[in-house]
Image (tube, rainbow, N blue to C red):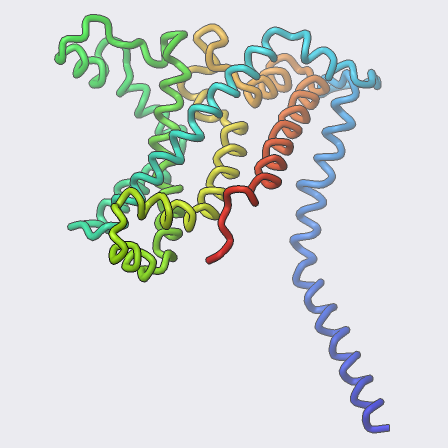
Length: 303
């Protein structure tokens, strides 16, 4: 009888704990449904219509999705986005890793250097874009003046040249983001047991061999996370392009998010803009899924 009474009290207590837990989660769940789930569903519905943002609309099926692949501006934006992704992502990872390896060593003023390299990440992309517009200014900018002083007759046009505009944006983004991911790599380096390096040193391993057989495998979980974050961020790039080039010159720096913005708010084609947005979502989802499925082949979980 006593055991039955205790069991009833325990069950009642568990229910109260579960109820309290869900009560704490309730504000986040409400926010998720109002600001994420419902807009996502509504966006897909709008992508199947000719909605302009005002007045009536008509369901047109998958016409907007078919129209995308017949739209030269969309194809150019897709190519630009892929170029931006496959240049900015590896460069960001490489520079962040090199900075982390350098700052992981015992340096004078090491903490000051960490602050200096992380500082660009604290600045808004709009402010960064304005500063780099001055630095890369075609005629009187300090970068081109320095290049001219070293004997270059025709310095690059940077943001104002069709061939160099996207490269300029990649440089700015890598400079800004490398400090943030450097902190993540530093955290990963601090978690590597020092006795592994001591054993390798006793066995006569060179620094390069220690990096290849100890540092790189032990850093693979951090590298995996950084790779996913940078890939997703690369398909969301918009602010730096809007501030510096506005998608130009011509369409040299127009990317997919910029096409969504242009179609929705300049031309009033909400349905078509939603279709591009969902195509963008599909690309990011597939790339993330492939990375997730292939992680077992190169990510080391033996920490």
